[in-house]
Amino acid sequence: MGWLLRRMFLKPFFITGAVFTALLFYAGCGCEKEMDRRPPDTIITASPANPAGSTTATFEFTCDEEECLYECQIDSQGWEACESPKTYTGLSKTEHVFEVRALDMSGNLDETPGTYLWTIITAEQVSAGYAHTCAVLSDGRVKCWGLNNHGQLGDGTNNDSPVPVFVTGINNAVGVSAGCAHTCAVLSDGTAKCWGSNTSGQLGDGTNIDANSPVSVKGINGVIEISAGGYICEPSFPPNGHTCALLDNGRVECWGFNFAGQLGNGTIQDSNIPVQVSDLYNVKSITTGALHSCALLNDGRVKCWGLNVFGQLGDGTTNTSAFPVSVSGMNSAVSVSAGAYHTCGLLSDGRVKCWGKNDNGELGNGSNTDTNIPTQVVGINTAISLSAGGYHTCTLISDGNVECWGAGVRNGIDISINVPVTVVGLTSVFSIDSGGGHSCSLLFDGTIKCWGYNTQGQLGNGENNDSSSPVTVIGLP
Image (tube, rainbow, N blue to C red):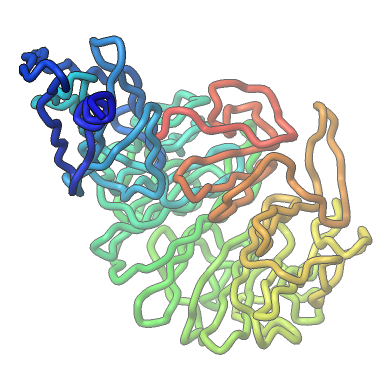
């Protein structure tokens, strides 16, 4: 009986987060033995970076005695028994406080817990341009990486960077779009700013002067989405480009290069300030290619305008149009994405249809023949999002896989595949975006992985080597 009493009183126990330890008695002697009263020190030995770029946080901890029990809490939500390592998942993108306290085998509790404060800032959106990539962070700032010969990274320099750098002066962005050699962002107040090449007025600031830090787009308010396109993106040529913005009234305005009528205002004259797209209403989303633009309407129809020599407008002709024309048979689209010279639409039933240029298999229909009407992508029936790149296309499937087709790179060799193939090594994908020759995925935990061409560091992993499998972007946030 004496042994049983000693075991019972020696063992600490938890009640609603508080630890109670009974006095130690020795049965049979009738005397009380004084216990060790010195509390243990709790030491956190491993913690997330601050700021952290993931919504998952793992902590390791110990005490200065031979053996301890532990209680943990996060954000003062209540103490609970825990062990090292302790992992939290699905944390909100804000400031957090982790606390841990040790209880030694004599029942002494550390009254000054080990404490760690940190902030989670993750990517909210990723956009892949011709040879650069940008991301909006959860705190409203923007980071870009890759080619910067025209200032398209927006950091005030023209130096390429294989790791993310902050865009100067942007702290309230809600969306970003990377184009040929320029980039634009939507701000929380409904205005827009652009930076990079301005050869054709694609920055929309009323000039044709390049800017390596953001400039305001003139005369535009109520912007809810922006899309930066472009033509002749090779670094050795002066890049042309255009930009379109969707306004909160359902109308669209575009500016920049207008060689093929891609501004949609019925002319072929460039404009360095926004002009309204003619006869286009009730728009849900927009997208821009090399020399054409498209809009998804609220009723599921799709309209396109601009260059059409490859059938990228999808109206059954190859006639270029400076006015929006209806894409044939597209009545139940939920998203649309324009590549360089092809376009794809996601239907409400999970299928994907593409049209336009197809010499690299970017239409995904098992052939390499151009088509001026939508054709179904082989084997895709449960897509939830898509993105058309320069000469390739990718889609996110409901099972979490990403499938791509068209031009690509494998083991340093250029390849073309005209049917979808699964991207290996991706899990928990939230969204995807395709650029000139690379693609990126934003994961649910806020990290970004990219793959493809990397000559200018557009994969963001600190290197310049192409990769046929996803690599993690470093330096976020």
